[in-house]
Length: 102
Image (cartoon, rainbow, N blue to C red; front, side, top):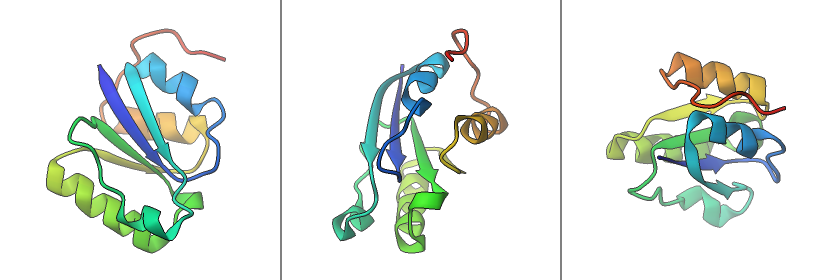
């Protein structure tokens, strides 16, 4: 069971569906556009934080990275593209648990 929080972008496209093939059961999404999003609290139950770099400003990315590190939660920085995210997941040691969705 993996709980994922995604920071950035207005909509995720196929990213949510494809994350389930890696065992994600709960996926929370924060667009990162609001100034209130800059102070995002990462839940203790989170297993992974995904920061979509092409949709988040530096201040928000820095805050989220520090919060994830303080809690010992792995953080992945990637573009808003399933192929880019999957490469980062594989680099971080995550393995697919189900066949890929198209």
